[in-house]
Amino acid sequence: MLQTYSYPKFAYRQSAEQKEGRVARHPVVVIGAGPIGLTAALDFGRRGIATVVLDDNDTVSIGSRAVCYAKRPLEIWDRLGCAAPMVAKGVSWKVGKVFFENDLRYTFDLLPEADHRMPAMINLQQYYLEEYMIAACAELATVDLRWKHKVISLRQEPDHVVLTVETPDGVFTMEADWVVACDGANSDTRKMVGAEFTGRFFQDRFLIADVVMKADFPTERWFWFDPPFHRNQSTLLHKQSDDVWRIDFQLGWDADPEEEKKPEKVIPRLKAMLGETTEFELEWVSIYQFACRRIDDFRHGRVLFAGDAAHQVSPFGARGANTGVQDIDNLGWKLKLVMDGAAPEALIDTYNEERAFAADDNLLQSTRSTDFITPKSEMSRRFRNAVLELAADHAFARPLVNSGRLSTPTPYVRSSLNTPDEDIFAGGMVPGTNCADAPIAVAGESGWLLHHLGDGFTVMTFGSVPAKTVAAGAISAKVLSVGDDLVDTKGRVAERYDGRPGTTYLIRPDQHVAARWRSFDAAKIARAVARACVA
Image 1 (cartoon, one colour):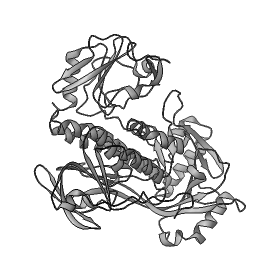
Image 2 (tube, one colour):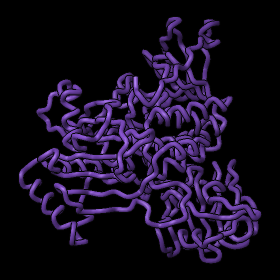
Image 3 (cartoon, one colour):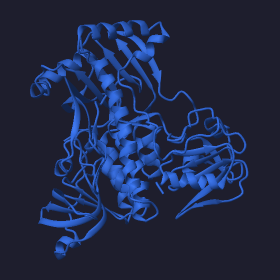
Image 4 (cartoon, one colour):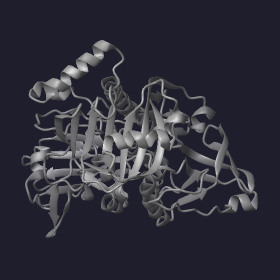
């Protein structure tokens, strides 16, 4: 048990299908009720997809586990109706500092510009995150959370999946049109379908210590290379809610994991860092090893993989849960269109195309961070230390400092769903990029742009438009005018989207840019919608 948190227990209930001894077919079954599985439940459920979530436990995650949640996942959770309590409870931050020995060498700001609704990052224990998401799921009639339901086998048929599930009342069989596996890095589902999970394990271990203490450290990310209190290794400090501080100590490969978790080993390390007179209590301790791996294909028949079941990265950079949330953001709208018959099943294949591309980017960034933090040779260590020495006074060296590149979205710049630019634009809103938020007003009420982009295709144009919708087959894209429908109160929309009069954007249901032009052309928009749906 933790000192600062009491774990809830969620009731196991026997389902009607098990009680009646019948085999029921469900549109979607999600395996795993961690942050990614719960995100899937909320996304699918809010799109009207009846979703069953199976989890073999009956509470939230044990220990704080994931800590840092980035701006883009917070925007996604805001769309799903559960971000507000996360931000209210979490510790918001955007400044990071890197120290070499005792000296500050580099400071960075994750969100230097103003006028964004969501903070750059929040730190929040994973159990709070899950609790808020479970509460949001309870408000949706389309979501059925089933605790103490363990999937023990799986068989794929041409048009559905057969699942064998173990419960306290015995074993029963259920079916699903689609299965989404969110059951973590040691995914049993991945093994059941014979998927390959390949990549690198790094020969280093880190100690996580969550410590309860009153401290005057600022709400910033502090990272030390070779500090006096932990020579020849690295240390990370973060503040969480409830005066809980996350401290990571690099241990080296020869460390004995079971021995290092003992309080008599952990407490002297903490006192050396915090000082003998600092009062603190241990909340949670764990040991982890870096791994950078991913699945061979995010789709195996009618089983789709997301989160750690699909990819693993080292924790420095907060690219695990944040990336998994974006997996679901990519998948939900595609699954909905295919299930509704508005798009061909080939659209599901683009889930792997886009999210494997993002996973490879995250793996590359994570591997580079790991190599910088844990040099594998004396030459690499000398290079790293020289970079840290130079960074204090020379700007050219600062981009080379790598204590974990913090999570940012990967634009799908090579996606087959994009319509390439035919006009010249400034700024970063290229096709495949997630939309930037900005303050706006509607009917005199202040608000935020992302709240008005919706869950379907949206056309955003600067100036008056000749139509309120654009039809493309079975899909109707609503049209929003920046000027008539939305007032650009601070000019940020025009600034961030290079919004000259007539400029028009087609935005996907996951709020990514699909296409853009310098004038409104309904025929071009319809063709771009069709391309984005593989139609």
